[in-house]
Image (cartoon, rainbow, N blue to C red):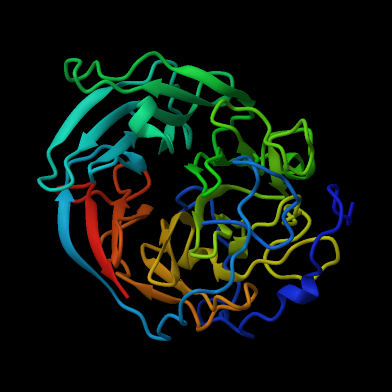
Amino acid sequence: MRGALFGPVQSPAMRRGVVAVLASAALLLSAACSGDGDGGSSGQPAGSPSASGDSAPPASPSRSAGLPPAEGSAKVVSTLTEGLKSPWGLAALPGGDLLVSSRDEGTVHRIDGESGKQTLLGSVPGVAPAGEGGLLGLAVSSTFGADQLVYAYFTTTSDNRIVRMSYDEKRPAGQQLGAPDTILRGIPKGSIHNGGRIAFGPDKMLYAGTGETGDTGLAQDKESLAGKILRMTPDGEPVHGNPEADSVVYSYGHRNVQGLAWDAQKRLWAAEFGQNTWDELNLIEPGGNYGWPEVEGREGEDGFIDPVAQWKTSEASPSGIAYAEGSIWMAGLRGERLWRIPLSGEKAEEPSADPQSFLDEKHGRLRTVVSAGGDRLWLVTSNTDGRGTQKPGDDRILQVEVR
């Protein structure tokens, strides 16, 4: 089907004001599949449905700051901690410490934001790591000071699900996480393409990126939670203002979403793994159809929303993204580099300058990137997940200064 299932979608012609040929996408197509890691297999868009109260999608305010510089920079200024095993999710606590998940070990550690000291908080029961599945994304409640809740996305023997756990640092180390309370279950699982990123938006709602598990048709099936971006209340319920009142599905037609971030205008951006041709950065519209598996990359077909930027799969395989200093910063797994996509602030369809890459092949595979405030990012390497080339000290959390 070529039409949008949730109603009108912005015409792709409005999206094709992108830079004519991105430096990173002007080369011949790659034949390698961009899976999770591959070598082998804050925000709201314009046009949000009307809603009221805290559950309403945030509006798009007018542009506040000038354009980011055409030429940026990114340099590692310190290594916060090392020796992490298959790190995946990263979430900042009030005060500056970090929580990091281990995909394969099913554990959560607290990392001191100054010294890098690691403290085991506990294991998450029910995690069944295999392939690209395991303990994936983490998020801290938007009201953490009051409820002390930590959210996690993980793979079980039967599905992917989202849970929340109370965190009590007064308990002994290794026992500081309470029993998981499942808020959403039934997200299809697979050996590949499990998605897994979760984040609270400016509207205090919880968003999740999912994958289509390799069953490509699920991405276009609005009854399935696979190949989607989901939007839900902190209790896991559909939000008033979602495209369909009884559904947590927010957008569809995605292959494997592992990056979610909001810019200064509160617009939601998502990074997505392509297959043989193009990885994507998309500006997310509620109810939007992003084309997979009918299209990959910018094809300008009616009913589908084209990406704002695209890359050869060998140069990206994008996982986490973050917003800082007027740009989206995108971590590349197979590409082993950090991409900068400067945003114009006025035309969402058009970056203000060509994307640039930094740290190329200096730290191996890059999994997750999180804003550390101002001109700083936290960047997580991913060389111990079975697909990278592990070096002494891997894996690490790096502090990066950007412009």
